[in-house]
Image 1 (spheres, one colour):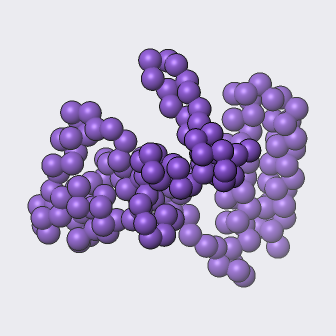
Image 2 (cartoon, rainbow, N blue to C red; image 1 turned 180 degrees about the vertical axis):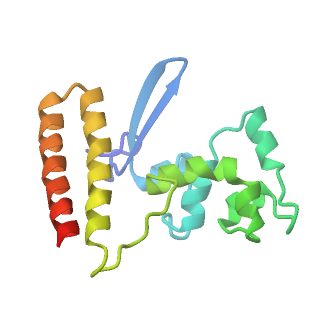
Length: 172
């Protein structure tokens, strides 16, 4: 599909805007999107962490978000605005100061707010199985919520197999 603005280059940017419940879509090439100010990143690597973070954090601000922008760490003086621009904290206390603001960001970027880390190779067998069972249980709940009962039953069977495997590993 060609760019809807210049009709020359291939459209690589898909824009969707919803204003007053009215959805409009546009397919633009990167150059036209940049010219019209539709790309949130300008210059440099668009996938640099700071640019990604700024893109996530820079939707139009309401009054609560404006309040958030004025937050400052009481130890190092870093403002939330500085954090969103640099993508770096000034000290360990910044994590506590900005915890409410960064939790949704971590959830969006990493899919979770808890770090699970790696499991040791030799001794982590049962721990790996427990984690997999936990993940499968969450997946099964989502399947039931979506009323995909066949998938939920398959997942239930996998969980039973893993529980048996875990039981055998514990015994010997």
